[in-house]
Amino acid sequence: AFKLRALIFDLDGVIASTLPLHYDSWQRLSQEVAIPFTAEQYRLMQGLPRRKSMDIFLDGREVSEETAQAWMARKNNFFHENLHHMTPAHSMPGAPELIREAHASGLKIGLGSSSQNARRVLEKLELLPYFDVVADGNTVLNNKPAPDIYWWVAERLGVKPTEAVVFEDSESGLQAALAGGFWAVAVGDAYTSQ
Image (cartoon, rainbow, N blue to C red; front, side):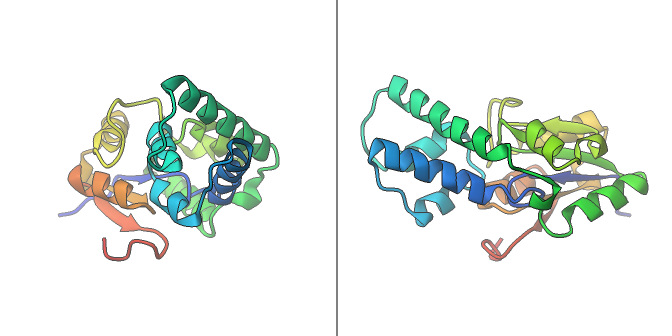
């Protein structure tokens, strides 16, 4: 019989309403370096690590790795400026309640995020104390859609993939959860085909 022992969450777009903050950061970079940036490009970045997002931003343009890294750092600085204004009000509807109730009922709670700012965002949302394990963009070598980050979290929570439900809002994240043998819940309306 199915025994639920853990809930594992993606961060951006699932727990935290950070997507507008990231979009604003990419927009500011776009204006500074005079490279056009569209909402469609931003949609393609969802769930991807920073360097892959930069490739989408560049859209085939050739720049040195040094320049790419400098631009990523600049974009991240813009995001950190935006983070200063983040409060628990920037939580996705229902997410804090679900996390608190699950924690109170004895379920283990984990985070598997491609964001390198994951811990800081959880602090801003006042949700960090509820998490038993936090994995971010620096935790594993192979990011989503590889299942590694979710396996890493499950192992540290002491649960099997079949005992955990992953909450995701991106295609790459859902692929990671399903490839890892987890139960998966798609959040939002972008990828209902999954």
